[in-house]
Length: 144
Image 1: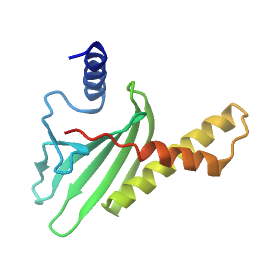
Image 2: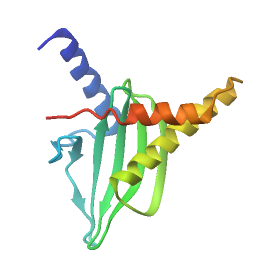
Image 3: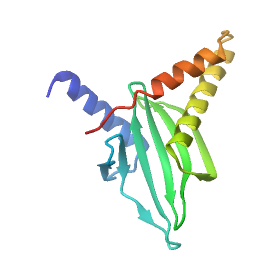
Image 4: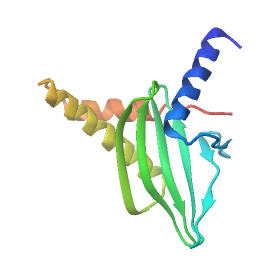
């Protein structure tokens, strides 16, 4: 393994210690785009787990609940690749879909950037920010 690859593994291990409980088992999704945590089933029969997507710039953690009829997006957290939480949002009765993830993540990141620019009194073009955010989010890394 190269020095760069070792550094990346070390960086990911450090991030997973921040976003996942110790001892969490991970597997790779069938499409190779997400890491999945082992789920647990509640007394009501619902299964809860997390899915983690990696881009060149961000780590996106989806909290998912799978009921008898629907799968729901319960929460979304977006981190930098060096463990800093950028944005988080909780949801109630938000049916899970890849389109919902893409929409919510883009909105959350755009708002975080717009808020940071406002605090620093920097003028930015919202449409340009939205376009750049979508481009960066579309660069999801395959894991297998």
